Image 1 (tube, rainbow, N blue to C red):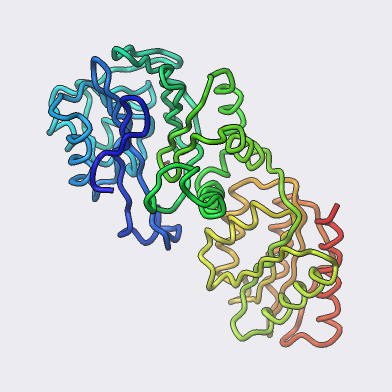
Image 2 (cartoon, helix red, strand yellow):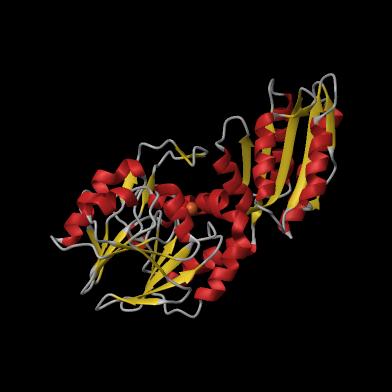
Length: 396
Ligand code: FEO
């Protein structure tokens, strides 16, 4: 992976694998790393599409140089200004001082703000084209997928969509770059986790983008992270369509926060009820142990969600609160929610979960269970019933 890799007629992947960053955005776990995909297109003129995170510059530049084979770089297209893609623009311009930087009206203030760059810049309008000789590139705004300036670049000659964060996923490239060179289970799970953590909040914008780009003849989708798609484009677009429409699968997620095991006991009883109710996919997450990204990913995929929390200083347990806050921020719909809490000397968790449930407005499944100290047999029966009722809700 140390040199530019040909990924189409005159198109090279010049991205990098990052195995050093532990948490993407200092939040999301990266047990399999993350790739920053960047590209170079050779026409009569040459163009780079996006760059990489700042720590990856040396490797990126080496690949750009290999792809260009001694030619100059004429254009840098900035599809997105988030620093995981724009991080080495300054250094790239030092290496190629005559490069023209292409962005839209919303790109330019960010370019100036982050890197102090306001010269050598070309502003393009939505739908505008750039003929580099042999390839005509067109630029299409997809605002809020993931930032206001986000855009995609389309190469009509090869029917390739450089899709920016859209269709992106976590995980480095382990040899192959393309979907037909990897196991689907492996790329799809990391693509969903990326969606749930980064893109989900903007699902309505994803729907707008899919409609807008629907008129383009697309044979390849090359995102800024993760797998490149060339074998079954319809299938991958359908995945994105489903996730952004919030179409869920039959199954349930049980998230709990527990200090001494009593709330965990309640959660396990809920899972027994779900299982006895016929739900085969039950994901049990200890909010203190699973990285939030995995809980969010499962919660985005499956229809049922049960949240259980002990009380901590008269409030929701902090790791459960973190999940609730981020999940609510994603504006979930079309799901069923059950809640339960426990306390030893002052109630707090269940009232907080009730408030959360009122605000998030998902279909409620009961009973709500509240336990004083350790759950007794009757409490556990209630938890079991909650699981069974959720099983009915998610099987419909
Ligand atoms: Fe991969 Fe929104 O940056």
